[in-house]
Length: 433
Image (tube, helix red, strand yellow):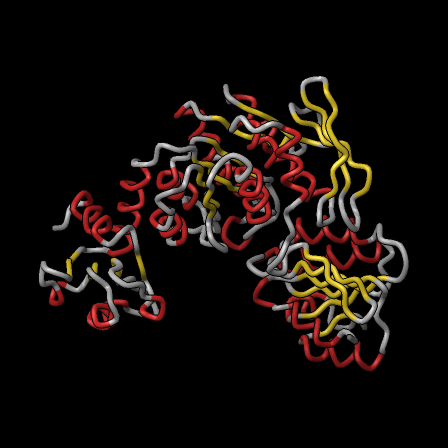
């Protein structure tokens, strides 16, 4: 059986290049044959060599030649072990980010802050699960001097695996919210899962960055010896003072009896100020001047359907269609309702809610009404099942698009938000340009 040390040597011989998709083969890489319910990477082992891979890691014994193709019992396990072995070679700071909402935005804020003094690397895209995290670690460039890894969980026990792989020097949990209720069942279970990062920090004597405004996290953090806190509503080591949250957030901050700012982000929402404050706290933990860290946050421009402002046909569009759960939708609606002038909100289904689905969708509809968002529209099978007779609810995106086109009534400011599988950004085609 191939040892992890020998596997790491193969990886080094491949110039630290790992590939799991023959469509993305790089010359002289290590190709790992991953398997799943609907695919078997072993079928592409020989093809990978033809396309330029130097070595192949396979879980099919009959393919082994001990020259270019090496057999292991489970290729995913071997990838994770390789990542852990390689992680131990790092001599630079590593940040591990968890939380229910805003992980990716927080990661990107943290990277722009770290770039003030470091050559940083961060998890690409949403490579944050049991497969994506090890791929991120083995994909970390050799010239990296600071790494930022995002960790996402959708069922109990996964964060423990991710934490063991990452072994962060600094941990950050963005917040605790209603995420993946189908897998967890309750907020208590979600909090317990995310607290694994704090357990790790406690046992390994590592620094934890604490969101003082989140009651779950601030309570958990009481037992931690090494912390730096941030917040807006509660006392914190780094306290934000928000002057304006929409459309672009404007804030200053207090740190060690001094006030810094004001600063203006290229996105809106009080929750994005918190994301920026967490990154500023990270910068301070790295020894970066706090004012410089905050100025770095001003340079970050959201993209990829995350809290992204766009203009089209005279309309201002807040495109936040990368993901959605009850907590993130509630926060977004409250911010959106503050906007002046006419407003149109288009909300798509929230997935992975399990038995809570209908209740949570009804709650969002009630909140929109409470906030006075008269032109709030809802689409998707879950919203429709929850309120089939509501004239603002449509079973499909196409039905809602047809209705809005017929109405020819769009607000000056438009919100598009839904779970990734809904692809709510397609409504951009329905908005007059």
